[in-house]
Image 1: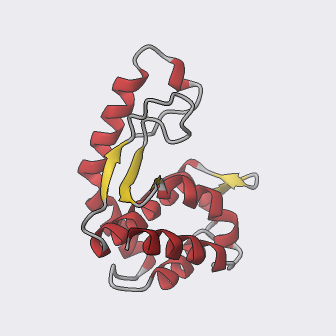
Image 2: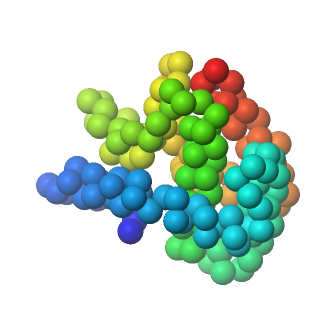
Length: 157
């Protein structure tokens, strides 16, 4: 199942479809994360930096790219890895949880998306974060991703 695209957001049934995606996301997240961990040959107990390195190596597979852009498989892998990183934050900080972002602000970039709430001053959307970091991770540049993960980890404390 795929989240709504910006073009989908104006459809009359957009919020209903977004909620259905959120329910699917929550119901399948553990299964998807476990499969990704098997592919990466790592465990949830590994550090965020070790997981980022393993994911970067996985992204070198040509199936994850199409003409220099993430393929549907690449996007799905980023979604699952973002779910894994989000789960790590939630397991470290019990005040955090997955939340359907039903913002009253219709220009909210995370509107109707699964986000992690409970931070001091904001929500974190790890899937979009990973989509933005995929090229760096593929190239073996993990520093920024590790810093951003550390930032949200500290913000939850």
